[in-house]
Image 1 (cartoon, helix red, strand yellow):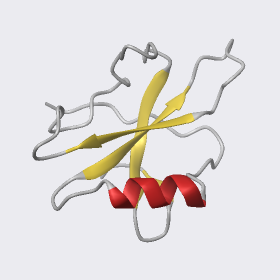
Image 2 (cartoon, helix red, strand yellow):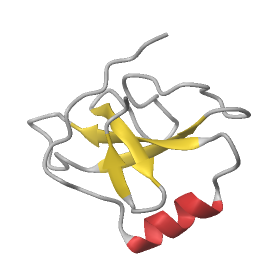
Image 3 (cartoon, helix red, strand yellow):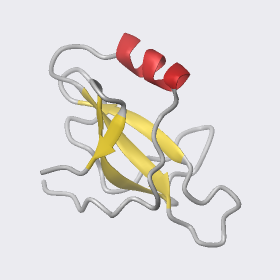
Image 4 (cartoon, one colour):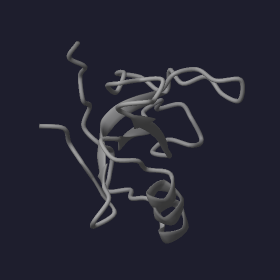
Length: 94
């Protein structure tokens, strides 16, 4: 299944602490999909969230929108790419 990758708003990147957490939870073959709040009426417009995808994860591939959880509703968060673990930047999927 192919999903749409949306353009990122601005150039938000995960900070040093978040990158440390993401790196510590990554296993071979997995990657972190980046999602950004695109709801123009939201006070948290541009905020990032991350979802681990790949073998052994709930999602093998990144869904177009961040899934709903018991803590939040994900419809505002659109898939904008994947975290490059070496440089800590979000790159659009190829």
